[in-house]
Figure 1 (cartoon, helix red, strand yellow):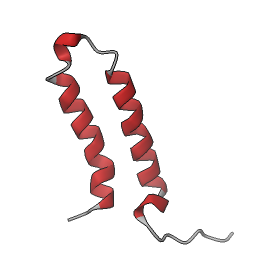
Figure 2 (cartoon, rainbow, N blue to C red):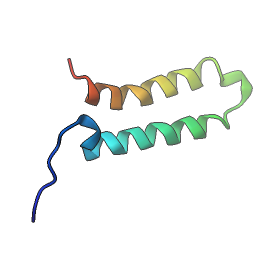
Figure 3 (cartoon, rainbow, N blue to C red):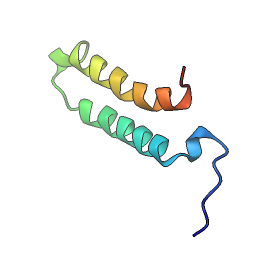
Figure 4 (cartoon, one colour):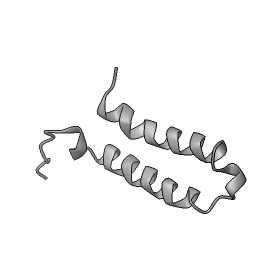
Length: 59
């Protein structure tokens, strides 16, 4: 079995899955009640974006 060469963080399967999940979470939170838009929704969206961001730019 030949392994695919990783040239960029976007080539990583874990990054791709985290990014897709973050986009899915964004779509799901569109359906939340209006009173949650500026507290819970914001927190959920920020936390879901932090996973692929940390894979892309580890400190």
